[in-house]
Length: 100
Image (cartoon, rainbow, N blue to C red; front, side):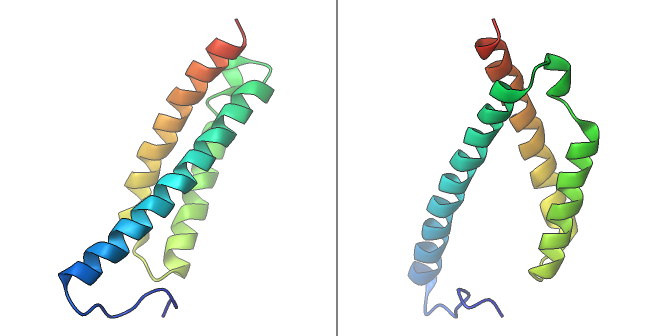
């Protein structure tokens, strides 16, 4: 069992733990979006923004990480597919902004 996972006394404990995790998740997503911007800056061609083999690589890695964490990979995959699509859309916007 993950050392962070604990038994809560009541719903207040549950909500406190979820709120703390949500703050961490948002901070991590902000970091991820920063690196999406870095990709937009570094890529020489707009055609390089959508990279299907990389999308499938990310999904495979996330599914493996979910399994390793004791989580059903079918739960995380659609969340990550949406995240990746939104990230690609953001990268297109950043690419266009940076490479005028």
